[in-house]
Image 1 (cartoon, one colour):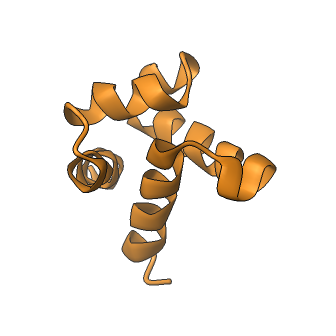
Image 2 (cartoon, helix red, strand yellow):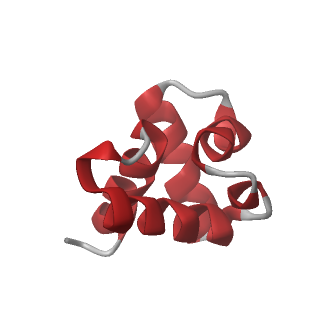
Length: 69
């Protein structure tokens, strides 16, 4: 699934320990599944801008790459 790849690529980017390492830096709910991790990351970036967690910013950047933006 593309969601899994987006989160895993973000993990590599920030040198986190896999998808769970990324989700732990975003929110408890982000640990639910890959889709929720992406949704929580996008919400963090939109609500907090540059103050969003590094993990959220990495997931958001990978999502934009996957969407060709």
